[in-house]
Length: 137
Image 1 (cartoon, helix red, strand yellow):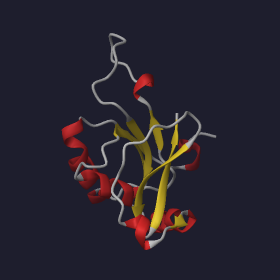
Image 2 (tube, rainbow, N blue to C red):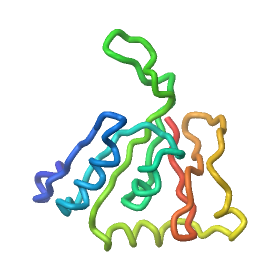
Image 3 (cartoon, rainbow, N blue to C red):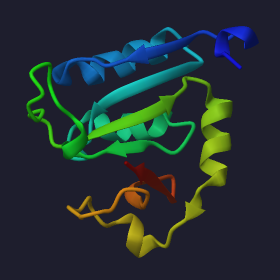
Image 4 (cartoon, rainbow, N blue to C red):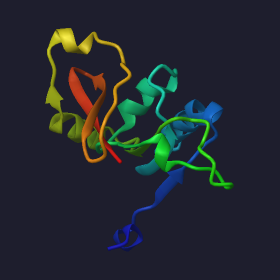
Protein backbone atom coordinates (compact mmCIF):
# COMPACT_ATOMS: atom_id res chain seq x y z
CA UNK A 1 0.00 0.00 0.00
CA UNK A 2 1.30 3.42 -0.90
CA UNK A 3 1.27 6.17 1.68
CA UNK A 4 -0.52 8.40 -0.82
CA UNK A 5 -3.39 5.85 -0.77
CA UNK A 6 -3.81 6.66 2.91
CA UNK A 7 -4.00 10.38 2.23
CA UNK A 8 -0.59 10.99 3.78
CA UNK A 9 2.07 13.34 2.54
CA UNK A 10 5.58 12.15 3.28
CA UNK A 11 8.66 14.33 2.88
CA UNK A 12 11.98 12.73 2.03
CA UNK A 13 14.93 14.87 3.03
CA UNK A 14 18.62 14.50 2.28
CA UNK A 15 19.94 17.93 3.23
CA UNK A 16 23.54 19.06 2.93
CA UNK A 17 25.42 18.25 6.13
CA UNK A 18 25.64 21.88 7.24
CA UNK A 19 21.86 22.33 6.77
CA UNK A 20 20.49 19.43 8.85
CA UNK A 21 19.73 21.64 11.87
CA UNK A 22 17.87 24.18 9.71
CA UNK A 23 15.88 21.41 8.01
CA UNK A 24 14.81 20.02 11.39
CA UNK A 25 13.71 23.47 12.58
CA UNK A 26 11.76 24.06 9.37
CA UNK A 27 10.22 20.59 9.60
CA UNK A 28 8.85 21.44 13.06
CA UNK A 29 7.74 24.91 12.00
CA UNK A 30 5.72 23.50 9.09
CA UNK A 31 4.17 20.89 11.41
CA UNK A 32 4.93 18.01 9.01
CA UNK A 33 3.41 14.71 10.13
CA UNK A 34 5.83 12.31 8.41
CA UNK A 35 9.31 12.62 6.98
CA UNK A 36 12.16 10.37 5.96
CA UNK A 37 15.50 11.98 6.73
CA UNK A 38 18.88 10.67 5.60
CA UNK A 39 21.75 12.41 7.37
CA UNK A 40 25.27 11.70 8.63
CA UNK A 41 25.51 9.68 11.83
CA UNK A 42 27.42 12.19 13.95
CA UNK A 43 26.26 12.05 17.58
CA UNK A 44 28.52 14.99 18.48
CA UNK A 45 26.73 17.37 16.08
CA UNK A 46 24.36 19.94 17.61
CA UNK A 47 21.41 18.65 15.56
CA UNK A 48 21.67 15.07 16.86
CA UNK A 49 19.59 15.44 20.04
CA UNK A 50 16.87 17.33 18.12
CA UNK A 51 16.85 14.53 15.55
CA UNK A 52 16.42 11.87 18.24
CA UNK A 53 13.50 13.84 19.66
CA UNK A 54 11.67 13.74 16.29
CA UNK A 55 11.97 9.96 15.78
CA UNK A 56 8.81 7.87 15.46
CA UNK A 57 10.50 4.58 14.58
CA UNK A 58 13.88 2.92 15.02
CA UNK A 59 16.43 4.48 12.67
CA UNK A 60 18.60 2.51 10.25
CA UNK A 61 22.37 2.91 10.25
CA UNK A 62 24.03 2.58 6.84
CA UNK A 63 27.69 1.59 7.01
CA UNK A 64 30.41 3.40 5.10
CA UNK A 65 30.97 0.40 2.85
CA UNK A 66 27.45 0.79 1.42
CA UNK A 67 27.72 4.50 0.56
CA UNK A 68 29.38 5.67 -2.65
CA UNK A 69 29.26 8.88 -4.68
CA UNK A 70 28.37 9.31 -8.37
CA UNK A 71 31.83 7.99 -9.35
CA UNK A 72 31.41 4.89 -7.15
CA UNK A 73 33.99 6.20 -4.69
CA UNK A 74 33.44 5.94 -0.93
CA UNK A 75 31.55 8.90 0.48
CA UNK A 76 33.48 11.27 2.75
CA UNK A 77 30.99 10.74 5.59
CA UNK A 78 31.56 7.39 7.24
CA UNK A 79 27.98 6.43 8.16
CA UNK A 80 24.45 7.64 7.47
CA UNK A 81 21.33 7.43 9.58
CA UNK A 82 17.92 6.92 7.94
CA UNK A 83 15.20 8.27 10.22
CA UNK A 84 11.41 8.32 10.12
CA UNK A 85 10.53 11.58 11.85
CA UNK A 86 7.40 13.53 12.75
CA UNK A 87 6.42 16.83 14.28
CA UNK A 88 3.43 15.11 15.92
CA UNK A 89 3.95 14.93 19.67
CA UNK A 90 1.48 12.03 19.84
CA UNK A 91 3.49 9.90 17.39
CA UNK A 92 6.77 10.77 19.13
CA UNK A 93 5.36 9.83 22.56
CA UNK A 94 4.07 6.52 21.19
CA UNK A 95 7.56 5.75 19.90
CA UNK A 96 9.16 6.64 23.25
CA UNK A 97 6.77 4.34 25.10
CA UNK A 98 7.93 1.40 22.95
CA UNK A 99 11.58 1.97 23.89
CA UNK A 100 13.35 0.22 26.73
CA UNK A 101 14.04 2.33 29.84
CA UNK A 102 17.66 2.71 30.92
CA UNK A 103 19.31 3.18 34.29
CA UNK A 104 20.72 6.53 35.41
CA UNK A 105 24.28 5.30 34.83
CA UNK A 106 23.62 4.36 31.20
CA UNK A 107 21.88 7.66 30.45
CA UNK A 108 24.99 9.64 31.40
CA UNK A 109 27.26 7.79 28.99
CA UNK A 110 28.31 9.65 25.88
CA UNK A 111 28.33 8.25 22.37
CA UNK A 112 31.02 5.71 21.68
CA UNK A 113 32.65 4.33 18.58
CA UNK A 114 31.67 0.72 18.15
CA UNK A 115 31.99 -1.88 15.47
CA UNK A 116 28.86 -3.67 14.41
CA UNK A 117 27.60 -6.33 12.05
CA UNK A 118 24.86 -6.00 9.45
CA UNK A 119 21.53 -7.07 10.90
CA UNK A 120 22.46 -6.15 14.45
CA UNK A 121 21.24 -3.23 16.54
CA UNK A 122 23.41 -0.45 17.90
CA UNK A 123 22.50 1.89 20.76
CA UNK A 124 22.79 5.43 19.43
CA UNK A 125 21.38 7.56 22.21
CA UNK A 126 19.15 8.05 25.21
CA UNK A 127 16.05 10.24 25.13
CA UNK A 128 13.90 10.92 28.21
CA UNK A 129 15.41 7.90 29.96
CA UNK A 130 14.75 5.58 27.01
CA UNK A 131 17.37 3.79 24.92
CA UNK A 132 17.29 4.44 21.16
CA UNK A 133 18.79 1.74 18.94
CA UNK A 134 19.45 1.73 15.22
CA UNK A 135 19.18 -1.27 12.93
CA UNK A 136 22.46 -1.76 11.08
CA UNK A 137 22.74 -2.47 7.36
